[in-house]
Amino acid sequence: MHRVLANRAELVGAGKFHGKLYDFGHFPGVIPSDRENDHVVGEIYELNDARKSFQFLDEYEGNFFRREIRSVHLHGGETIESWIYIYVGAMNSAELIRSGDYVAFKERQTSETVRVGKISSKEDLKKAFAIRMRVFVKEQGVPSDIELDRNDQRAVHFLATASGKAIGTARIVMRRGGAKIGRMAVLKNYRRNGVGTKLLKRAVVTAKKLGAQKIYLHAQVAVIGFYQRLGFRSVGPVFDEAEIPHRKMVFREQMKLTAKVVK
Image 1 (cartoon, rainbow, N blue to C red):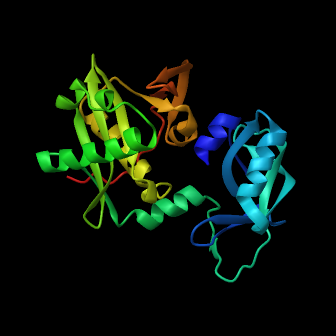
Image 2 (image 1 turned 90 degrees about the vertical axis):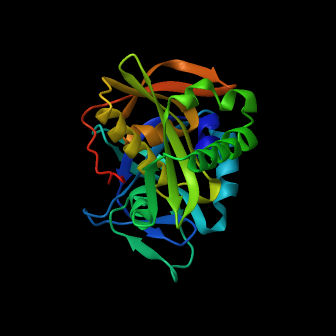
């Protein structure tokens, strides 16, 4: 859905509205609430072509959701009116997410099962390369001859595992006192479960230990919101890498790191 919105909308920022958030196993759902302490947080997008976009989104959400106008409070303090998909289905299997934050909820679920470590063996490096080929080459159409490059020889690589299975990877390349985080990839079945968050936090912690004066990355436009939530800000215009829109993002020092470093 992030990639769909990236092609159809512009990210406004993060916001919240009065409601309750529930987990239904394979997807979240929200219902309105009048209680002051009940709120749901999420990303706000401005649609480029509202009519066509809503045709797609209405069909995607299905009969369990109804689109309604609600007041949303942006993190900067502004209040706007926004369309929100309200859950109207059965509540039998629903689990209340008290924080109102679905991303944080999924991260807690995987915090004990997912481990991120620095790669030190050729075997693990091959696993990381295999993940990148599957995600970037097979899924996104990046040419295989540019996916694996000369920087891999001098980079610091990371591998995320769950129950012994390699599920994600990232790398750091040091350049003139700066650290470029890149090749962030998570297998499809494990996305939106906090794996990317753990990889990115570990990469930032390691970059700091390496003495990086600046930490930056080239984010695919479709997932800029993910990096914004973790302390990165966009700089400069959108540009293409491997025919995919990207934007440079720089880490902000005020980000609070809570990553557990795995030696």
